[in-house]
Amino acid sequence: MKTTIYCFSGTGNSLKIARELAVAIGECEVLGIPGLMKSPAPGAETERVGFVTPVYFFGIPRMVRRFVEKIDLRKAKYIFAVATPGGRGDILRQFQELLEDKGQKLDAGFTVKMPGNYLSFYTASSAAEQNEVFAKASRKLEEVAAAIKSGQTTVEKSALLVRLIAGLVYGPWLKGLPKKGGRFYAEENCNGCGLCEKVCPSDNISLINGRPHWSDRCEECYACLNFCPLMAIQINKKTKGQGRYHQPDITVDDIIALKE
Image: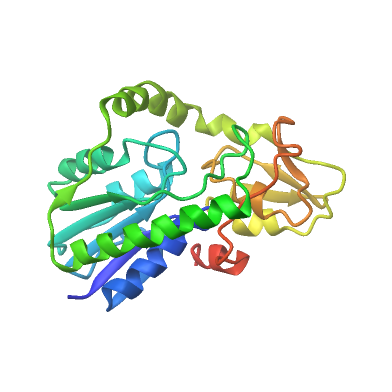
């Protein structure tokens, strides 16, 4: 059975997992959600469809939510989701609700933990810590691929406390997204290379007189922050000295390609 995986990824975790999963499943194509959002009527053409996405504030990234609401899934007979959180989340239950609203169902849902990139809350993990997480993720991915290939119907459930926290923080985070871009700024060492503009999945960044400016379409993916080659981009001074993180096997060009 042919498979299509729809992927959203800011700093590469989800794209890495999507690519590895595609190889393990076979006959699988990975498509970027940012690029498909530009289509007036995206539609799945394969019978097996998957979504691979990070977890933002215990839930589904806004662009992924809008894409699930927008895409035509009537040809899909098996739908799965793989979340790649740096911490925890209630994203699979949210996927179930979104699909039920479309008259569909989530047949399978899995969580594959990856290193976090939300550097306004914590510093980047060390290379040794990252490698340990990657090794565990690869082992979990083997189980996920086997379950999908066999058509297994199972959705991992989050703990009650996680669901409660998600209920408290996710909604306010979504409502506050239009203001999130205002937290970013470029320090004097910014050379105007424009890389931040290129990697932004929502085209929220524009260069004005050689300096990046953020609008109100921020997804809080932190691609601009983590891929800046000079570490010139900061968030309210919280990220100074916090290090940076992006999945080491994923390049800037890979992230840009998700928008095409």
